[in-house]
Each structure stands twice: as structure tokens, then as C-alpha cells.
Image (cartoon, rainbow, N blue to C red):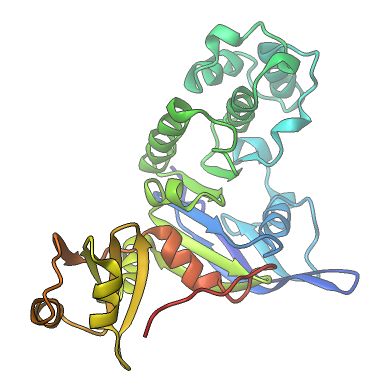
Amino acid sequence: MTDMTLEARGLRKRYGGNVAVDGLSFRVEPGKVTGFVGPNGAGKSTTLRMMLGLDRPDAGQALIGGRPYAELAEPLATVGALLDCESLHPGRRARDHLRWLAHYSGLPVRRADVVLDLVGLTSAARKRAGGFSLGMRQRLGIAAALLGDPPVLILDEPVNGLDPEGIQWIRGFLKSLASQGRTVLVSSHLMSELQDTADHLVVIGRGRLLADTDVGELLDEASGGRITLRTTQRAEAMTVLAGDDVAVAVTGADTLTVAGLSSEDIVARLGAHGVAFSELARHRATLEEAYMELTGSVGEFTAGAEAVR
């Protein structure tokens, strides 16, 4: 499959007095699932629209395989996109919707049945879209994105509305697409889903790049040498462990994370004061924790967090 890297080069977009995207640059490589995340108002949707030629950047370039979307010879056979699953005509049957899109785009109409099967909607092919659940509309939107068998996929919130079975399906589906050498960019606000799916992460805030990193490396950095402690004497443990160079944070009814002390120091302090504990382990940050550390100061609405020192 041809190398079809997505690239943002110094993208900038202003709406009136608001700068939605401000000098944004990043690359999305083939063969990986890349998560594209940021707080509300970060500029994600604007960036995706510029990638797809729906909005013109005030400065910079959005390139697909080295070309702007408008210069692609066969756009739908190059890029498949899901931006809004609500744009379906409610009276049109699922198969007819896909066949119409294929015909209009110069694609083989037989692809309609192929992609319906890929997304698990064969049994609903003759049903009208107006009767579909949100999860079924999402699947139909993904089917439409796959009509041209494109090497590049840009999906905005594809997990939205899916039931647990659907979420499990799309995790494996996105990974399988990337394993075929396709370029897969997924915008999402569900960090827990990207942790199980994404290989790489692009994080933006207020239109600027905050991180462009391997997911594993980001989690290692966010873990920060912290220790997870499980104890039924949480208050006593917090008092014993607190200090000028130590941060202790509550993470559950009977769990704490401790930064600034080694496991040996924690055991020694708790033992000296008779504080019992049942578990002591190296803390492994979740993608949500890492994301919150990156974006905590750039969200539209932020709240303070407390730690005992």
C-alpha cells in the first residue's frame, strides 16, 4: 500500500477574533492508530476539517500523501472520513444510502454490501436510517468511510454511541486497519478507549501542539516513579508519609499514590508507626491521568486538585 502520511504544517485558522488553530504541526504515520485528543475548544474539529479540505487554513498546509485534499485524483478512494453520523437521510435504507454514495463518487456499487458486512450491518441493510440507534448510525458512517477502500481513515469520535460489544469490535477493527498499513487518525475524548487502541497520540490545547508521542512512552513519563499504596488506614498513612518533598494523593477508598519516597522508605515509615497495608506497587498511570496532566491548564473549564504534602 502506498505510503499515505497525514501531515499538518504550521496550520493556522482564525474565526473572527478567535484563533482556533495556532501554528499546529504534526505527522500521522501509516501502520499505526493515532489518537487525536484535546479539551473542548482545542481545535480538533477545525483541524480535521482543514485536513479534508472543508475549511481553508489562513496559513500552513494540511497534506495527505504530500498533497492537499483538493488535489487528490480520487479523494474517496484515498481518504475515508467520519465527521458527523447525523447527516444521514432518515428515510433512506442503509444499503441504498451506501449505493447512492458509491454511484455518486464513481465507486463500484457492489462495495455497499462489502462494507455493510465489515461493520456488522448486513442484517440491517434494508432498514431505514431514521430507525437506527446512534451506535448503528456510527457503524453506517464508518461503512461509508470504507466505500473506496482508502489507505487513509479520519474518524471523529467513532466510539460515540456504541454499546460494549460495539466498543470491543471497533478496538479490534481499528487495529486491523492499521495492521494493513493504513493511516488511521481517531479523534476521541474517551481516553480509556484510546489506551486500549492507540499506538501514538497527538494532544492539542488552544490550537497548539501539547504532545506528539508514543502512548507507552507517555504513560511511562506520567507514571513518574510514583508508588501505589493500598491500606484501610488511609488517613493515618497520609499523615505518616506527608513531608516537604513528598506528595500523597487519594486515588480510591483504600488507595493512595505516593511520590518522593521509595518503596523501602514507605514500608519503613508505615512500620515505625504501626500503619498496616495490604499492597505496595509501582504506579502505572492511565492514559486519562497522562492526558489530564498535559491539558489541565489549557481546558476551557478547569478545577483545582488537592494533594497532601
